Length: 303
Ligand code: ADP
Image (cartoon, rainbow, N blue to C red):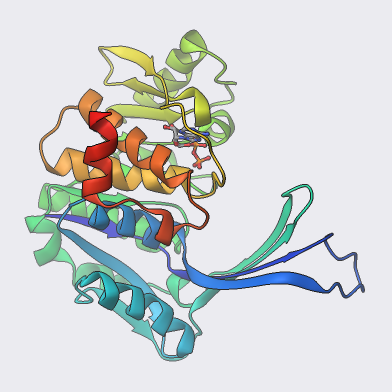
C-alpha cells in the first residue's frame, strides 16, 4: 500500500481569442470544469496505473467537493481518507487560456486543502504504518507536510517529495525526505544550478544529497529525466510522442513512479514506467482524464 498526501482543487478553465486586460471582459469559446490539484492528479495517476493508493486530501462541504468525490466513485476508489472542512470552500483554480498562443493566467485559491490540521495528520499513523511510500507536493499548508513527514519517518514509510509548486522549504524538512522529484525549474530555484546537461544535473543532485536526501530525480520535460541514487547517475530519454497538452506531465510521472516503486521495481525501471505514463498523458488534453490505465501503459511499453 502507498499514500498520496496533497491538494485537491477544481479546475475552471476558459479559453478565449485573447486574455482579458484589467477591466476588460472577453467572450470565451470553451469552458471546462474538472478535478485538479497536484496531489489529486498524482493520486489518480498512481491509482489508475495499478497502485493500492490511499488518497489524503481535504475538501469543503460544497458542490465543488462533489467533483472530487464523483471522480473517486467513477474510478471505484476508496474515499476513506478524504478530509472535510465545512467552513472553508473546496479549493479552485481559475485558468484562462489564450487560444492563439496557449499562454495562460491562473489564480489558485487552495481553500480547504490548505487547512489540514495537526490532528488530522496524527490520525494517519495506522495508515502510514502500512505504507511503503507516501508521495507529497508543496500545495497544501506546509505545517501539515512537515508533520506528515515526521510521522512517516516514525512509521518507517519513505517520503517522496515532488517539490511543486516551488516554495522555499527548510533544510531540516528536506533532510527527512527519501526522494525528491523537482522539474528543471524547481531544481534550479532550489539549488541555484541551471540543469542543462548531465554534469549540471549531478551538481544539482549533490546539493540535495548534502542536505540528506537519498535519491534525486530531476524531470527535464521532453528531454527525459535525470536519475541519481548517489551512486549511479544518468539521464534517461523521454519517449518520443506528439504532445498536445503537457500540463500534468509531471503529475503523471510522479504517480507512475509511486506505482512502480510500490511494486518493488528498481529506480531505473520505475522511471521508465513513470516516463511511459507521462508520455501517454501528454497525448491527451486535460489532467485527470488524461492519466492512462495500467493496460494502456503496458501496451505502450511493449511497442
Ligand atoms: P512538469 O510537468 O512538472 O514541468 P516535466 O515537464 O519535466 O514536468 O515532465 C515530466 C516528465 O514527463 C518528463 O520527465 C518526461 O518523461 C515526460 N514528458 C514531458 N513532456 C514530454 C513530451 N513532450 N514528450 C514525452 N514525454 C514528456
